[in-house]
Image (cartoon, rainbow, N blue to C red; front, top):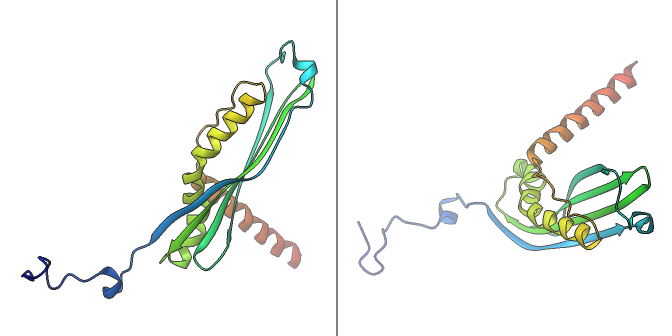
Length: 172
């Protein structure tokens, strides 16, 4: 039955009144938190970089609570390009986002901050890395998509193995 004054069902109540408030997510900001690009041997590379570079890439994800409902999730990315001439370039960037999270269950908070949030900001990090390497005088470094869920699970397994290893050593 509908209420003739507003056209809505009389039993339609907001989710909060029924006790099933949904999770609310807002990207409050995203930004470069820290950045370093070093191009130490450009004079040696002016005639061309020579052989293909050896690329070493490292990705880490961190998160922290900023205030009651505001959290920072950050991707720490490092790239080192070398060849027989030495270092071609070294790039270090921390790209972060501030996320306002409401009504998220505590057990879902860590995975959300370390999987979902980095997935949301990664395309912007990828573009920034490509632009920085291009502006540094090199072909753009185009990052492949990162499976943050697998990264999260691997880190959890490594942390569990360290705890078990520490317990075994303590009892030996």
